[in-house]
Amino acid sequence: MCDFSSLGLADWLVKQCKQMGINKPTPVQEHCMPPILDGRDCMGCAKTGSGKTAAFVLPVVQKLSEDPYGIFCLVLTPTRELAYQIAEQFRVFGKPLGLKDCIVVGGMDMVSQALELSKQPHVVVATPGRLADHIRSSNTFSMSRIQFLIMDEADRLLEQGCTDFTKDLETILAILPAKRQTLLFSATLTDTLHDLKSIAMNRPFFWESKSDTRTVEELDQRYILTPEKVKDAYLVHLIQKFTDEHDDWSIIVFVNTCKDCQILTMMMREFNFPTISLHSMMKQKQRFANLAMFKASVFKLLIATDVASRGLDIPTVQVVINHNTPGLPKIYIHRVGRTARAGRNGVSITLVTQYDIHLVQSIEAENKTKLKEYPVVEKDVLKILTQVNVTRRQCEIKLESTDFDEKKETNKRKQLILEGKDPDLEAKRKAELEKIRSQKKKFKQNIHETIEKQKRGQLKKKIMKRKQKKKAGPTSA
Ligand SMILES: Nc1ncnc2c1ncn2[C@@H]1O[C@H](COP(=O)(O)OP(=O)(O)OP(=O)(O)O)[C@@H](O)[C@H]1O
Image (cartoon, rainbow, N blue to C red; front, side):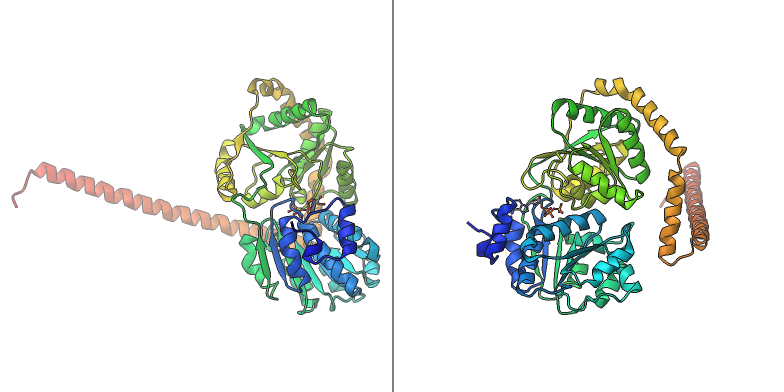
């Protein structure tokens, strides 16, 4: 049987693992740790909750113990909460070394971060945007000697989603030494493999867990087909059911937008569920505080946007509910991966409207798993439908009376200013683009109509000809 010692891990680290209840390596640890200890670049793709963090933290801590200096390792991650979680793992495993870490994320005081960076911590865990800001604005630290660059949720860091990290990554990569070990991990690496290979150039070792499915077996994946207007009633019904049936429960509900997150949180509180929210429009300190309270089970229900969909490790979560069907299978994998972690059981329930059926089909095809219908007594849902919808409307009105939408607009403007753009000019440019787009659409429509007209004209002509031929009677050949 494989154990940590046989993988090359030092005795003091094996002891450290034991103290954390980690006795036997998971497959991703078993396969990725030896090549990392051997000095190779590594790309590890394994399912959610399979211990990828320790697979890179343990070898780095071991290497650090052999030659300790700062800054030894840089970890990049897409979300601020995940940065704190990873830093904590470094702190725990590296305790006997007196490992010093520094967390560099947006929404927190930049001056104190700069000060910390200047003290040359062993490990820096950062989100790309804030680290790039530090690089552009100060010269109080150097990363020219780092031994390890780690990109956790590497595919997210490279994809050009709503938060595009590519420019910031360029700034960061430019100051890193070419001679380094690069470690890339995610549960969904495969579609960005090509881009990743250009970052991990040192004979990268690639390991992917072999499995028929991309989600864990311990996860019971369900769906409920519902009209849009009944969704919230289903949600309230489901949460009430879990509260009634389990003493100890913990649920994450994923929603599409910050506004929806806010409204659903208000609604769930109206129904007396101990609810807390997490989304990108909240102050960072509040985000951390809310997550801590959810982790400590002070609040049992977390309503969150996709800021919480990757990496967060909260073992008590038994259920994940998708209030909207995720648009991409990848997003689905990470969201439902917040439950059924490290061999535990869990349930995911996706609320599906008639317009989302094709999304479910692509999720099923990509993950090679069929979602089963979650049985619900419809009569019970319909009983609460009016009450739920009235409550929603009241919450919407309440939210409208606050400055939520204004804040959203202000945040957008702030973001543009940070990106070095003029918000008014951008708005003008957007309006012009919109005008051009609609002109193009009109133009296309006109062409389409003209072609259709011509086709109809030709068809008419053909019919006329045929009729004339018929009238003229059969002709001899
Ligand atoms: N060898 C092990 N044995 C038992 N538990 C482990 C082992 N390694 C890690 N764990 C635990 O498993 C849980 C999940 O690990 P981790 O957060 O690293 O998952 P992950 O693969 O990074 O998931 P995700 O893709 O969602 O980020 C953690 O609570 C961690 O402490």
